[in-house]
Image 1 (tube, rainbow, N blue to C red):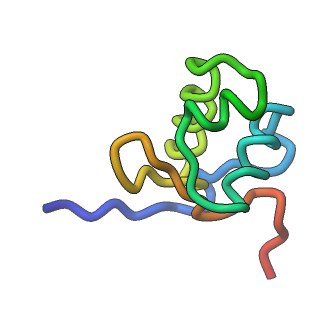
Image 2: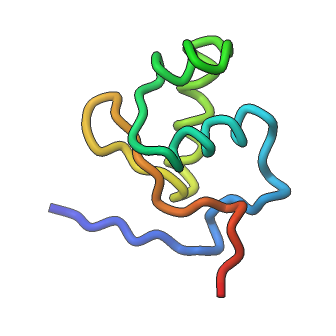
Length: 81
């Protein structure tokens, strides 16, 4: 079993976010989401939402907790103290 360590420097910053990322993060702040749910609520295509979620996971801002279920790890829009 391997453990993945997330380097804070690889996470997205607020200036790296587009409008779709903002909406996805808003929904993740409310709780766990699936790509189809986000697509339905935002009007973005399912594939585009999957791409956005994948990018957030890749950078350590979100994580896939189960097949197709995502949760927020770190919102890049919030300042670190």
